[in-house]
Length: 517
Ligand code: AMP
Image (tube, helix red, strand yellow):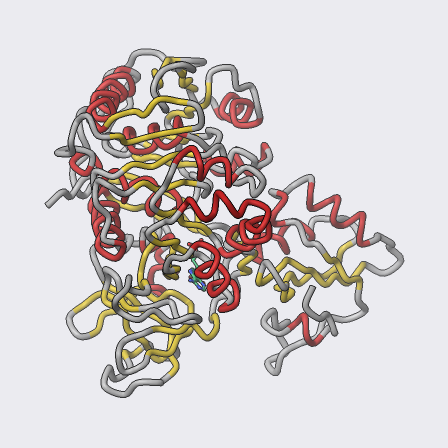
């Protein structure tokens, strides 16, 4: 059983397609493993080896997919959102202790400036535009010279493969390290839930700095000898052309993307009729039942909703493929880790034989992170021992029926889920409070018809100061990634408090009279 990312890529038909992209010949599984060996030699030649962190700031596409799977087998990869502003990238590079930054040849954007400011060497990916999709060479760039590799060669099962920041309930994002064995287990779990075979082909439209696209679309496909066709990002207008060119057997996306695709499906009826995917997968945010029904009707295939989380290296539960029944509104059955409900206060596992109780969803399994890095407080809150297992608390509330089908009913953590993009309200508070006119701020979720939730903030101004909604949003926009900027900033005299006198984020939109957007 493969326990490393390196092993996941091996043993597949060498001539079988692995990575595709618009207008490009396929990169085969054989060529991919050769490329992984070359990239390992290049990165080791720069003095970077097992356990060393390498930040990837690359546009979505086949090069990013290749860089991820090749490097995750020999160093610890930190994929960062390439649209983040300079300060957020600088924070991430420093907080994650990146030893190297990898960017595209010719990139002179904020990531390079941030690395320069921190004295982090930069390597560049030269791509061969007419070669097979994702054919790249890793070249030493600024500050990157030969060095003795600390720990060369392929990573072991307990070496880090991937490290991500997660938006938590603290202002400071938490660091989630995922080991080679976590990634391997998760790829196996996803492959089993979806019955992936070498005949499958995934169309990837998910961003490749988020766990969903990295693990479900790219790694799970490659680990099963299947192929993944990498679009240059999500674009609802171009999806139908991609479906024609890639001829995928499935794609995975967040509900807002499914909705955008559905909105244009009627105008592309011929493509849709010819597409005939085996299934469509949805994860990272709740899939509204009417969207699921419309997708099934339009594409004539089952829609499989799954429940994932960064700390679980993505998948925790999944609706089953036919002939087993799936259920709209449910995130399905345990699909890899053990999944139970727990009493929140204790925490204590709820009795498995008493269905329909509400509790916090807790998980235990080989895909789960060993723990947040350098954060004993968060780990003490997140993990507990029971029935001979170590359980991780997801912060989501659920209900399980007698057949083990899980339905999410709420959230204990204060995370805002904006169509799958997660925002920590405390991070937004932390930025707005530095505005000279702001005395108090509470960021909260506003119900939104298509996104599920959007970001709002209530602000009390300092006496004698003035600032408009527009000023405050512009202030936030200069300091935060676009998706975290509150769409609505309400200037109020007082922030409604909960029974304990603390501002209460959950339910604040309603308390302030803000209805769904
Ligand atoms: P992330 O770490 O970005 O993958 O976010 C994980 C969180 O997304 C989970 O803890 C849930 O709150 C939410 N989530 C993931 N999948 C679903 C789903 N199918 N339905 C509802 N919420 C989901």
